[in-house]
Amino acid sequence: MHRILFLQGYCDEVDDAVQEVFIKVFRAELPAEEVFLGWFYRLILNTGRDLGRRRRTRQGLAQRLEQVAPARPHDEAPKVAADPALRAALGDLAPDLREAVALRYFADLPLEAIAAAQDVPLGTVKSRLHTAIKRLREALETCGYAHD
Image 1 (cartoon, helix red, strand yellow):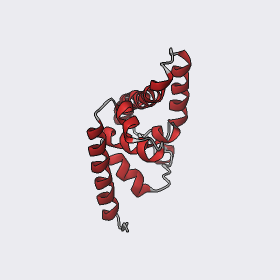
Image 2 (tube, rainbow, N blue to C red; image 1 turned 30 degrees about the vertical axis):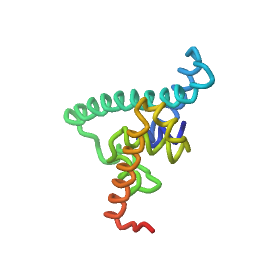
Image 3 (tube, rainbow, N blue to C red; image 1 turned 180 degrees about the vertical axis):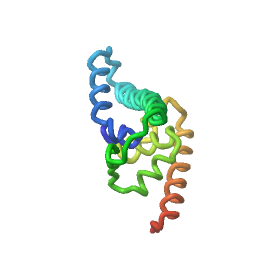
Image 4 (cartoon, rainbow, N blue to C red; image 1 turned 90 degrees about the vertical axis):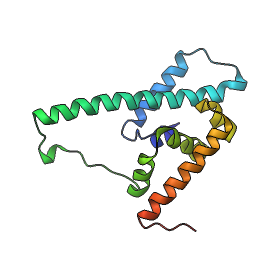
């Protein structure tokens, strides 16, 4: 769950997102065991999307505040990234592509489970993964990374 939310771009708020998912699970009426995983991953993705909308609202308010009262340079917190090129490449992906990558390569879900979590057909998942990998490869090659 942590990795999926992290890859959705909520690096700074990932602990809050994880906590929010657990609260939602605790309060929810749990589905049958055979559909639980699809329901759970859908809950994770939707929580991430909700946080994204809230973040955009906060960023818009912060930008308006910055126009009224600009921050001094020492007020800015440093941004830390383990691999800036990869973070940038993932950040440039559309949310649905980034989610598919997170579910496949960080949650190790089979394609069918990703389709259930994203509520799309299996072919759409395959297409999203293909497109995402192609775009990631192109972005990383542009930054000087070569693939074998």
